[in-house]
Image 1: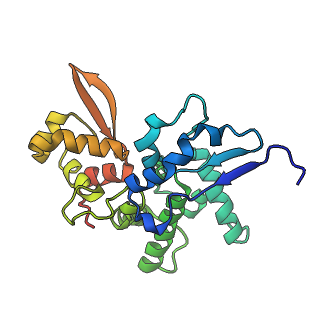
Image 2 (image 1 turned 180 degrees about the vertical axis):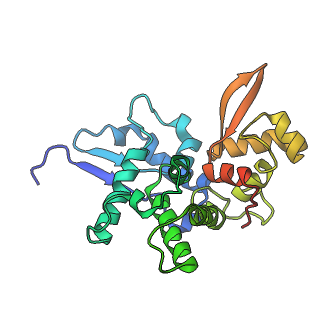
Image 3 (image 1 turned 135 degrees about the horizontal axis):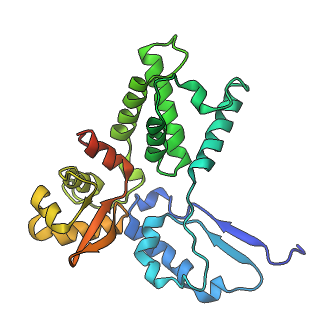
Length: 256
């Protein structure tokens, strides 16, 4: 067509329903594309793949990340605020230009921060939170002109408890009902008293016994926890998902 080195964007390779959200199956499918140097080094065009981070983490050691650019895409808080304000402005026909004008004076800066913390750098989750917020306020008082602190906490709790965690975390397509998945992992983490923990603390509080290493490896592999430092020769981990942290702080229990 006369164009020089066009860019080919390949998105949603990991979203085919036949994968059933099984990260290992997805990783097997994408491995040939991301490890073929001949394909990735073609001079005539440039390839850009958009991949779910969890299956990519499974095969990251097979990908030449030093040769090919592999950034992790995240939305900053300021990006999310601009997106939210623009959406509110458009759908209110310019009556609302800033999300803070929807709340009354009882809302603190810490509560605003909690909204974006639970959105977890994801615009879809932020919009979902506000959807629930409008629904909860309408259910409580359809004549209200602003959201108060009580309704906000109610909406955030509902968002966390009703969230489809299988949308974000992998599961085995042929898994048994009692197998280790995000909900069984969360059940163990919610027995902890702090966001940071060691393997010994997990075993002591959750009774994971000889399976402790297996649990920690599994949770780290799907991005639910991360190793943040060493203390006296022992690894210290941190719960990454703010929704699990919210449940821990508010004594909430997650159910499938």
